Length: 153
Image 1 (spheres, rainbow, N blue to C red):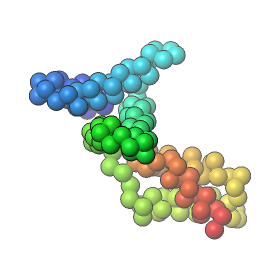
Image 2 (cartoon, rainbow, N blue to C red):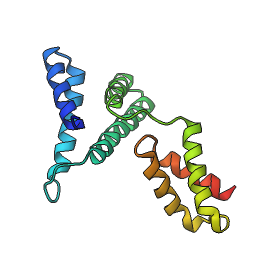
Image 3 (cartoon, rainbow, N blue to C red):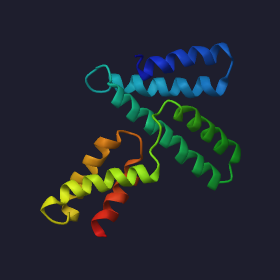
Image 4 (cartoon, rainbow, N blue to C red):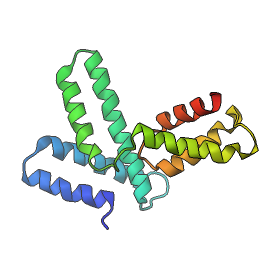
């Protein structure tokens, strides 16, 4: 199975041949972000999970930028950032819907509540356990919010 970086590089070649400027620049930035992470600190080959984390961060950055541009009235830049985010999203695993995410959080909280109701002191452990099961298929903030809601009632 090809790694995410390999797939991005193949798609970059396709975008270059098709003269698709948006895809070309977006994929180049994503590949550069992965390569920068590989050489940061001790140089090493990134795992698929680390590559996914970087790509998720790139999508999140573009979505935030689009919101900022839209709020400032720069619709053309907001549209560009949104298009880039959508292009990168196709490389991410399918996102969990609200019901699936709630079920995972409920299971994690139920496992932790064998010795009584979980407390806010355990929130970090519960969020970590839920994020391990989610593995990039939902935003960490959404997981944390659901865990907090489950603990506080």
